[in-house]
Image (cartoon, rainbow, N blue to C red):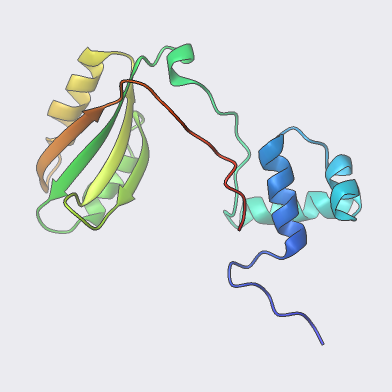
Length: 155
């Protein structure tokens, strides 16, 4: 009898692999294999399946300020009409790194990363407010990033 697959589609071995890579994205497949009881090749295959399925990404996370992006803000957007086209247009903007459709007082939240206040003003007042369907926006400028993690695990 086979064990039923968890609701999220990840077995305990895949969860451990994800957690190992969240601790250190450069960790070798051999090291991960020892931790989960698989060969290096088996870990490589599982990692590739997780990447292909969109379960995870392996990326370098930068500090925006250290790479010349001195201003970040969350922009709340209220939309008239269909929300999805506006969300897609926001997601296509290179300065927007996060877009989520929400329930509540805003239809969409979008995080904008800009070089400075002038660029943030141009993005919010011209490009975002100029999108068809955007009724209103409210911009929340970040003063200090208190916490940002990428290690919430696989629960």
